[in-house]
Image (tube, rainbow, N blue to C red; front, side, top):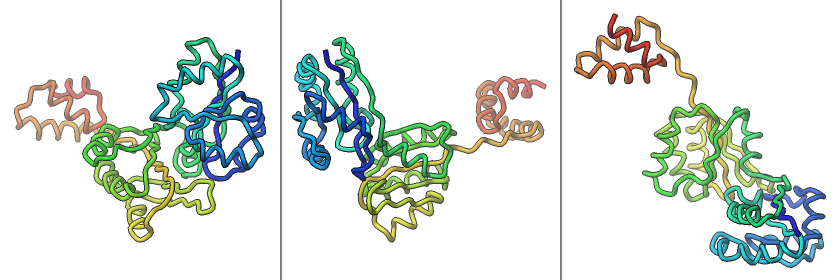
Length: 270
């Protein structure tokens, strides 16, 4: 019985692949590749002649059976056209099906654009939220960003060159002028990092139209400054004129002040 290997492949520089990954690609009975043409270039570079089958977003569900048949005869390597399979690329469904069928699934770590961009961004790396590609439409993009407005962890997102400016402007409008790093063409000849703030990135790309693969690393929301008691009482007095029920008033002031709702409610009645 074979094993399914999820093998990370270079995101640009062909040297960014491990000796173990190359050995497993050579030894596998089959390579399930997101883009056989792209993977073919990598295999040709290293003189690997393992047979390939196409496994991509448009056929991933119908090809699971074919991959499982090959697993019955030996190891199968799953690769995306670049980076780590299953992370914004086909892989999750196949891994799940292989596990359900009783096969082992093993990750072979390596290149990953989101992690590469994060580590070189200059922003906090201890905790982060990965968003994948931002929504294509501005309204949906703004809605998602609004949901994350109070998220204190670093945000990572992928974007395409033709949508980058619109996304940066939406980020600026919804999240404000936060710290930001834009990684472009990572590990490739024309690798570029634009670090600074969202506004800095907007100014840069207005005069330098972006090309290639892009990863955004956005600083999380700052820790809110907790109000003093006098400031909370002043806000309660001011907002009480609106005639809100005490529970609603307490909730509203709590969200603004950094206080616990219960403590604000107590002040209303003292």
